[in-house]
Each structure stands twice: as structure tokens, then as C-alpha cells.
Image (cartoon, rainbow, N blue to C red; front, top):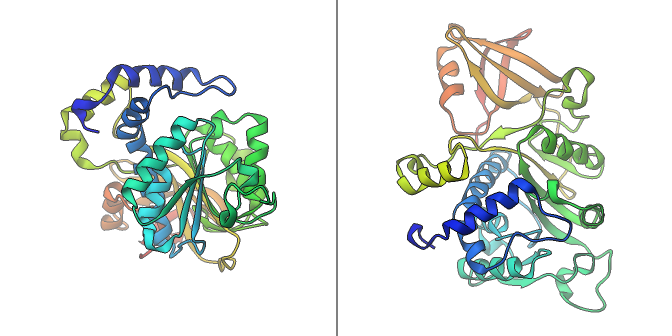
Length: 341
């Protein structure tokens, strides 16, 4: 796919569908060209969010132990392709793809096979009958284990039946990577799911603790756990990307996302003094202000520019995940270092 091959009318139709929201059981996809154009544009933006998530997982020194991946609700398959490329296809035996749209599964399968020719890529049977070792087998058990479960941008479209199906899959997964748009509503929905799972899994990221989520404290009803992925700088000098952003009504600079990474097999993380900045810092001339999450909850902190000019500048310019060890005096940060990879 190139910009000259892009189906702009298809993208316009897809955008209208995204804004309206699909009806139960409906699909956005009508042709392979729909999926190819989506994957090249909207899918690329989702891929940049996954790049940010995967960068944070490397920062947290985590990688999946499982050698099978199930991409549930795969769409064009960009999420699982990013995951496998990040950790290395040599570290996986198989990728299984499922979506309610057979057209999407076919596209995602073809794209994954092209990118990872030595990896076994297959369509998963009905998700509750998924079993890595006996795919499509009539003897597959509803309790068969699943390795790494990848879920991306599905939460605002789940029917109650699909949500129940996904919950059943999570119950059988060794690890779960789930990324969603960083809106207030969707992020808090994802956080509520995290709350139901934190006693069953070790929380790898974004949390620096396994305690109750601070955004659900009464005083934080207006807050939500979200972050911003850095888009590639070259897109701003690419006329076609600029045209896409204008036509889609998208601010190319802003890529808000919410996510969690859970691992059933990893040991619980030890108590640390790590903090995670929620959203991004606000910079004013004399100071920076940000919402900070750590084991003590959510609190707004300030960093005076004169206290640590280099840190003040770093918080404004870094594209790395905002995971830090602070030196504090109450709600004032007087210094700190980012978590080293």
C-alpha cells in the first residue's frame, strides 16, 4: 500500500462508521481495500500507540514467556504484528487471529504471514474453543490455556455476549496486553476491568503498584489513566499525512491511549518507589505540574524550574515513558531520574 493507492472514499466511509459506531454484529469492512487503506493510516496510528506500550514494557524489563499469541478482535492485525516484531518472531511458535469479520481475519493473516514468513499464522476457531496445540479441533476444551492474549481498541464496541466471551479468554490467558483509546470513558472502563483482575495477575504496567486504582477515589472522578504516544516526527513533513489528518479531522500530534499489561506467571513486582505520570505534564514559565500515580495514590505534583532545570526540560521534551523515581518535599519535586531501560 502506498499513498497513491489509498482509497480515500473508503477512509471517509470508515470514519463515518467510527463516529456513528457499528450496530450489533455489524462490520466496518466491505473489501480488502478498506482494510489495506485503514491499516496504512488509522492502523499506523494504533501501531504507534502499541510502540509506546511496548517501549514501556521493555523499560519494565518484561517479555512474555508464552510462545503463542491470540489476537482477539484483530481487525487488520496491526497490534499483534507490532507485538511479535517487538519481542522477536523467533520467540514465538504461532499467532492465532480472531475477529467477527472473516474479511478482517483474512487480511490480518495475509499481512502477518508476509511479515513473519517462518511463523505459524492461523485463524482461531470460535474463541471459546481456542486451544493452541489443537487449533480447530473438535476436542478443544473451553478451559485450555492461552498464551499471550492481545486486545486492541475493542472496548467501546463490545456487546454483552462478546464481553463475556473475552472475559472467559482472559481467565485462560498467561498474559494480557490490552490497549484502548485514551478517552475518559474508555480509560475508566478499562481501569474497572483492571480492578477485577489485579488479584489474579501480576500488574506489569502502567501501574507501579498492585493496589486499588487511584482514579476511582471519589476525589478523582474527573481524572482518567491515559498517556500520549509520540508519532514519528517525519509525518509532519509528509503532505499526504497532513492531508489525511485534515480529511479525518485528526490532530496528528495527539495520540492518547490507555492500556494494561498483566502476567499470571510473573512473580508479583516488589514494592518500589517508582511513579508514573498520568497524561502529560503542563509546563508554565516557572514550573511544571503533573498528576502523579504511585503506591500512595494520585496526587498533583509540581517541579519548580529552578529546582532542577534539566529535569524540567526533560519532562517537556522526552518521548520515553514517564516512569520516574522522584525526590520530593511534600507535593514539590526537587529532583528525580527516569527509570533506566
